[in-house]
Image (cartoon, rainbow, N blue to C red; front, side, top):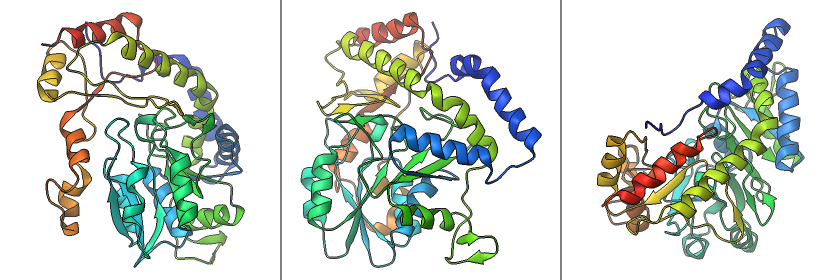
Length: 365
C-alpha cells in the first residue's frame, strides 16, 4: 500500500464545485484586489477566531513582520523567539531590524519553554513570539503572565494552528496580534500564498492594514513607509469556500491523531505529548526516534511518505551565521532536529492507510 505524506485530493474532490464557483465569482466580477471577497473573508475569519479584526496579507511571514513593524519593534530592540520553529518566525524579526533572542523548547511539546523566558529578558526586549508549532498550543497563561510583568508585546505565530484551542480559547486571541499563514498545505490553505493578521486593537489593525498597502490609509496618501502585502480576491474567495469546512477537517485530523496515539506502541518511538490545556489541530504529527533516519528509510521503503521538521535548527542555518552560534548552543532544538519524523496526516486519509502506517511503525526493529 502507498500512503503519501500529504494529499490534497480528498479535499479537492469534496470542495471542487465550491472552489470553481469561487473562481467564477471573482473572474466575473473583474475585481482582484481589495474587494468584497477579501472583506467577507476577513470578517468571517475574525469571527472564527473570536476576535475583532482580521487583515488579509500576502503570506504568513508578512503577517508576523507587519505586526512587529506596526508595534514599533525595530533597530536596537530584542524579540524572544523559540529556537525550534520554521525560519519564517526568525526572519520576521530580522526584517524589522531587531535582534533575535532564542529560547529553547520543552522537549515534550516542541514549543517554547515558558520557564526559560525570563532569563533572556533584558532592557532591550520588546516582544515575545510564541509559535503554536504543528498546531499544538503553547502554554499561554505562563507566557502572558511574563509579558504583563515585563510590559512586553506578544505576537502569536499561528501559522500551523488554525482553530487550535488553549483551555477552550482559540489561539490567536492571547496576544497583541497574531499571524496566520494560508500556504496551501496548512489546515486552512489557499491555492497560493496568503496570510492574515488578527488583533483586537483597532488602531493596530488600521496601522497593519496601511503598512501592507504601501503605507497608505487612502489612495495616494502615504502615512508610513509601507510594504506591498495584500490578500488578493482570488485567494480570499478560495479561503471563503474552505473556511466553513475547517472545523470538520480539524476534527478529522484529531481522529487520525487519536488513532496514532492509541495504536503506535513501538518503544523506540516517542509520541507527541498533549498537555491538559491543549486541543491541537495536528497540522503535523511529529514523533521522535533516536534512529530517525533508519525509521524514515524503512517507512519510505514501505511506500509511506514522511518528512522532517526541521532537520537544521535556525541557529545553525547558513543565513544566520552572523549570529555567531555553534553546535551545542541550543541542545534541545538540536536534539529535536536530529530525532523528529513527521507521519502522514491529512484530511481524507482512509482507515486502512492509517492502520498500515501504525502497523509498519510498530514493526520497525
